[in-house]
Amino acid sequence: MKIPIPNHLEHLSPYVPGKPIEETERELGITGVIKLASNENPLGPSPRAIEAARAALAHVHLYPDGSSFHLRRALADHHNVHPEEVIVGNGSNDLIALLLQAFVHGDDEVLLSRGSFAIFKLAAQALGRKVVEVPMRDRFSIDVDAVADALSPRTRLLFLDNPVNPTGTHFGRPELERLLGKISQSTIVVMDEAYFEFAHAADYPDSTELRRDFSNLVTMRTFSKIHGLAGLRLGYALCDRWIAGYVDRARPPFNVSSVAQAAGIAALGDLDHQKKSRTVAIEGVAFLTRELRAQGFVVPDSQGNFVLCDFGVPAKPVCDALLRAGVIVRPIANYGFANAARISAGTAAECERLVRALGELKKRGLFAR
Image (tube, rainbow, N blue to C red; front, top):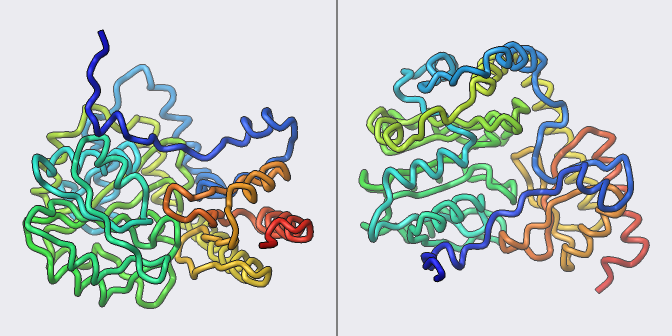
């Protein structure tokens, strides 16, 4: 007898993560592979975070603090909010799922921009929630006005990433305030600011500054990027206490490991490492943008630690050829960009290697139409 599977799971395409370096080297029989596919911090974690994580390992026979008391207090002090306004999770993905579980039910809808962070849609589909998508503006940017027009009384959660993953584009504070002014209190607005620390545009908004006027606003941040703790899976959100309280009811016990909690607290205090990571990312993005455009590719301005590169031809053969050259980048056809790849800003040497590899592929006529 076959167990019946709900339609929303039967037809769900699972998320496919970027290839690890070790797997690529093993498959292709090569060494010296570099990975510019997952927007990881090329400097690694803070030395303080590593030291704290090692110390925490001595106590992993004990369950972690289920309330993440000290981490939440550290984050509250960092953002000048009350600890009860802080939610922590096993990465931002965990928080996305918890928000969906807590607030979206029945005929409720989840609103998002097509071409934004894939997990918004995947997490909603995995739970059988209805998703409404709004097309992007000018190919690569969230159309804030179209999002506002798509709001309905059934819109329970609105997910927005700023900067946008994978395009790197952003929308400014006036646009965000205009949108928030049109949204009912029955809709929760979730701002995913995973790349907040790298954004440097003059009009880029810090959504935490708007929470006083909009109690339905949730700001998500992560330790995976600027802090280099992607492998420990640690994300957090700042929101009104009533939202945090209901998310906490849906949260499974011990959802953040003791090692992640300790490393996160230590990483928050290492401002020097954060400054270096920001500098490397901004310089890397500037280099990639300039050099890739010089080769004739379309690269929108990015406020993240990565760029989107539109090759003008199907990206998969390009990414496969780069893979054979020992450079891993991320094809993003699943986001609706069949001709593009997302390329992380690595070290200066890694960025230069990527540009050289693409130059060699161009000489071989890979981009000829």
